Length: 406
Image (cartoon, rainbow, N blue to C red; front, side, top):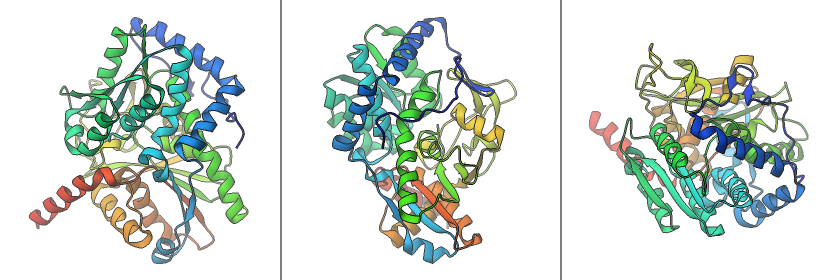
């Protein structure tokens, strides 16, 4: 892999991906975002920045992650030949560490000593706490109180790494509200604080930065599938919450029109108000947390409640580049229900010996439905964004409730 990623031509200078993106923030955040944009532009043009980034990815994160032929899963399903991009094997257990390392390097370059972050499933919080500890920086992570309860192992991991985890008890007590609290903190401490946003969303330049740091996934997967099969895949599948793991792997194939890109959102228990987080199946365009994108909102433009068995997909909006890819038809977006994601997690565990994150299980659930309908010559890559250790308690409770309902 080259030291510097191949950047796409979008977003434009104002941070828009077609009709989506931009920077919709209070005046108090304009200056720090402009400072951040300037600092990132300088870093992105500096080969030594990317050389250090890639050194840390290799030596600290453990990249490259494997591309594994899921032979038993493929045989069980019939049809497509399935490969798994194993981001669950990265240090801290998910793709989030790629972005955390990139932004910590940028924070260090900017002279910021205090790192704040938001987290839903806890994986971004753990990755940020890990990177901050490795660089000797103070770390504060905002997390919805409900997410803290269902992701307690990751809360303990963050605290073990020296981070302060702040419960957010307002609103839905989930990721949406954690993002809002982190932004409020940033407004009050812009002189010494770096906001390490975890997904490919928010005001410009965050969506581009996160995509660029996560593009290592797509760069590796492209080279790996060419080495394994001598050709590009026919399809690439990834789960989509904010969208960082998906945009990371999509970026390696986005210019190849022969490769179908599919993002899988959280279908929850039903596509009805408050019961899902499938933005493309029930949302509309609006302004949300600094960006113009597709969100779940009511007729007055107020954010609607969301639900998913996976904390990392339980979010009101989607990254603006995904909104652009959907609007232009370059990528398709579907959803997987809670029950299907849990069933897919079990199937993957028993067929391949891999317990994936509930977020990733949504992508696997799509593969379970799609693969049998495809010819054996079809090559599908499924991005496993993270491992499932953090979800054991959720799974146990979910299955106990199901048994009780019966």
